[in-house]
Image 1 (cartoon, one colour):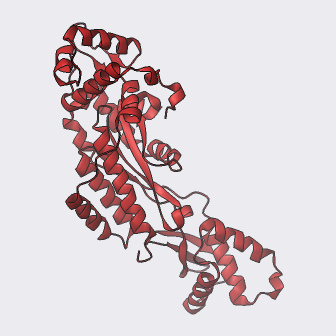
Image 2 (cartoon, rainbow, N blue to C red; image 1 turned 120 degrees about the vertical axis):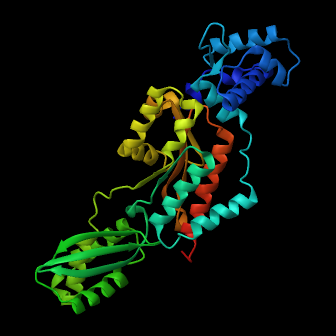
Image 3 (tube, rainbow, N blue to C red; image 1 turned 90 degrees about the horizontal axis):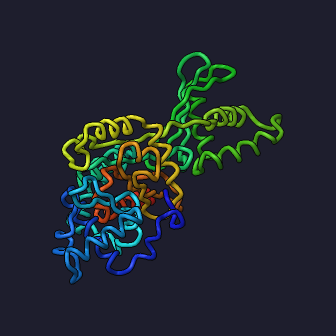
Length: 357
């Protein structure tokens, strides 16, 4: 993303320049066509002639905030202009209507017992409401509290270790034991491991395990030793595949912001590269509030001529869990999209933070 120091000197825009720029951006978002001086004269809150407005538009073009696709055409906003618009000209995004807010929350709450289903529903809601692409980066197992550890016999010395996270997230892996264990022993080990280590994040569990393993192993009985051994293997999750839910790519096929076939291809290629998208969303995890990445501010969005509006959501204790976002053309209706993303992040935070989850 771009910080204020890197933006062209929009802070120096006078009132007339700011109003002309705002009018052009809003009109271009609405119609997708270059905006001419006569249109600006009609819609801007200024008593200026078309000739005076053309002079102001030329000044804005010199600053890199407008471009002229064709000599006889009007102007279109640049990525820098959209950045000015997002940071300086959206006073407060519109609130989601109460009836729509209730519908969204009910749709997510129906799936709250299973986190993956709830995340999938969140991406569908974002896509449907924006008519663009909805993205949800599901909670990383390493960030959530593990409520239970369960172990089940597979065959011989192989045991299935299952970590059950708060809200229904599950991670499983196969571990090996020194000698075969029957299901009764594994039930006792599961209960003991849960009592000793449950209610903590993976990092906290590892720290406690290291402490216990430094203690005198000779003093441990069979149940304690087996619990420690299996729990140690179960929580050694160095790489947990992040899951990204993507919904609504087909929405963009009819979007005038992606009228160029090459642009459509570039966007679909971007959406297929989930690892790259996950990397971008992960970098936004620790940001505050809604964040906007516009076109050339990031190689990913620049290549596809698109923008990303995203916000992190939180779980119990305020821990950052994941990211929700909307991807669309750079001329997306930023105010409305920012409001939607902010609201979806707030709903997921409430549901994931609730003790009834």
